[in-house]
Length: 190
Image 1 (cartoon, rainbow, N blue to C red):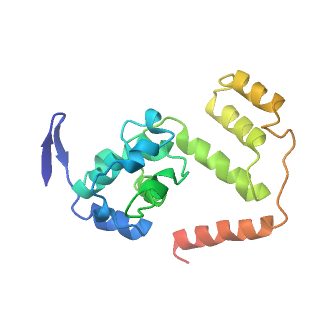
Image 2 (cartoon, helix red, strand yellow):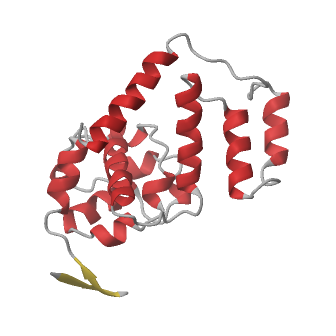
């Protein structure tokens, strides 16, 4: 099935809403577009689609368009939108489900190098039990080739004590690794 838009016909996936609801554990149909989630989003200016529009696109079955969007990748999972939702929809969980679906289907992220950033973040958490911003960002900068971008900001953050020079691990990092192993086994079907 297709819907006609200004940009031409768009394919609809009529099972998309059910699939996202199942993966995220959220009732997507409960969204009635009050826009409270979008009005509080701290990264709204960086995505091309507001959070309420993401939910509407899911409701309309616009899977292909949404999985290719920048919006699902720039979400930082801060839960501000979910806290504002009068129906208690945890949109961060929805965004996680959408990113997972995009990865599984081999859809290139709408934001260049964002998947690499996510991988560097997760690698840092896996090895230390938490993230060490300095080493994580260095790894990202080296792999992405964006070596000198943000250097000024980084120096300012370091001088203000916002970036630790040396990484600190948490005492329960074996528990964190166990969570990563569990997730890996779950994904592979074991």
